[in-house]
Length: 491
Image (cartoon, rainbow, N blue to C red; front, side):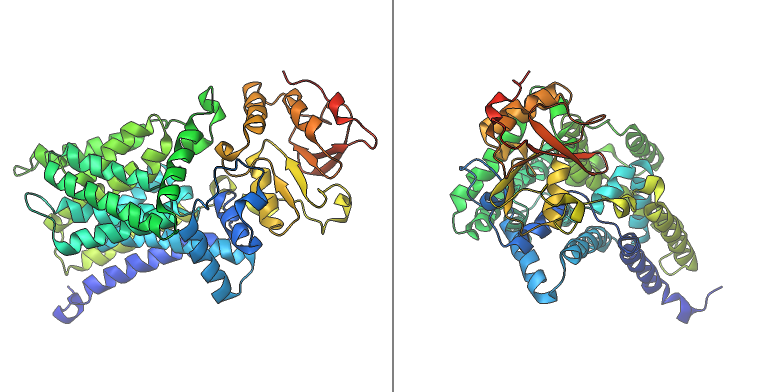
């Protein structure tokens, strides 16, 4: 039996275990050399380049504003403060955003070990969720804000929100609009509040959402243009494809996450055995946000993995907290044992390099002028890289942020000029048929390059010469004296 003096330190010891776990997991993953191969790279490269997107991409002129002004402002301040290299400018947000999301979830609990248990369930039942948390992107700030606002508004029941609750909500939503840009996504928790039957609270949240979004957009100096452009990008991202496979992975439907659904059902059955449990307890913003995110995720997976799943994990932690409080006293040594066991299991599950998920990038090769074998094969001054593979943009821009060329495809197809977008969609529609690049080849100049990942062998495009630049990657340029108008017609 622990002495009375020792027992007083048990709650603090549990918090120490939880915080160390939250810090050590992303720290260990980053220590492997992990770098996310997507938007975190282009955000860092954008800051290092000092250029506007119009100077980086061949894009539509009606997207004149930065889509993530706050995020780039914060990264720019970090870049100047740390005087760091571009890799560190990726690693720091990867580590910091993961810690922020996990820590915010724990802060709302009397028994933070319940959050470790919920996270362990999420990592085991949905391995992609762990990868999502390590992407170092601004959507993670929105996720942390969601985990902050849901508990606040869950307590606003049958009363008017207090001034501090409204001020906190407006401030956080303003930060989300300025930093993440996707202000419209916070209509989701507002809809969840409405589904609980708390229509007055839903109106208060809706008003806070509108006020916060406008304030955040005002930081750009052009609030209406910024809000309009964000909505324009939303509709453009989903309005230019013919079939779902033409969308990026995070815009495609979820697989319904049946294991998570079964886990939620099991918890409901377990909790319903208690005589004082009422089904009405499910009509709270946290659980309803999870359900709404799951339903919408059947159309677009981001609703589920970025919004529904975090909300359900928070709900699961609150339910487990109730069980822990019933069975284990607050100062019991069993709490420390339980927390240590959950910490070890979560650490091993999250940091395991299964299928090289944390180290696959270590063998990546990049197109750089420092490679003597690529002499003459990279674009010239004011050249354009024509490519239908966004990964080429992410990696090449990351390693060459100040290079004097532009990319026809960047991080979002909706930003492409209409005729270039048509080429991309034809290429996707025809399952990678290189004949779709006919228009691009006809537009190419001697300082432009076409980069392709063919399924096998040298790309079969006339009037082009090719260099096998990197693994599975070919660079093509016009043959000297070639009339590009003789390129093949698109299918």
